[in-house]
Length: 366
Image: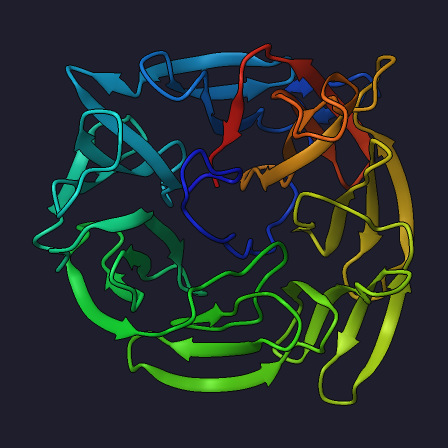
């Protein structure tokens, strides 16, 4: 699934904490160096015939390889990076719009971008028209792949798949779609987090192999859910009816453990190496400790004269750097500006390694 969707696919995937690896290879403006260049996938171009998947390496920003997403009247919609570095999952269908009644297939591409597995809509149990492409995420242990289908007739289905072969393992029917933004969901093993994300909604941790609920709590009213550090410690933003602030909130005691007025972000907060990165509306990336909310510093997203705002972000699993897709709000007033720039932030040294305006729509792949 895309970090900033180009289709009506829903939700964000919880991102797991990953470690840093810093040493000698590619240098940034601070004089420090990275063991491995930052690599990530992005869909670039307008929806339709000129859209392509690009694997970028940075800094500096340079394409390593390119794959057209519309070829021979067949469209690929990229859904999620696979566990292999550079691999991904995609939906493949005829034409350029999501087809009616099962004329699609789920495809896995390996790190060489070779097709290693396919499953047709019929094999995955879909015989109905869908209102959105499937939303993919891993279970907490990354041993299983979850496909959330959104049929027009309602009744979302969670399909548990083998991540390598895409073979169906089991089906879980739930009325609430998985919607885990930002930091880790707090789930363990074969669990996933299900929630609508709004105040008063339940947070449900479900073991997808058994279908059993392992825990359930409720988001406080008038607050927006921004992710969970554990099953009982969540990040929330609110109150929506007053002067909002971002809090680390203990659901068991009903007490906020820490708060930060400045952590205002359109992109979900990214957690990496026990640090949260908030892309502020003022154009800065604010880095805070994930557990204490201690402010550690800020990095300017746009090192030029503008103030780009990040609307989506992902992490690079090899380096723990945070990559954001951003736009300049001054170009569009109150509407959504063109998301046409890429920013790479180092949350350990709290510095911007790269900010480049691509000049075309950019959609990061989770």
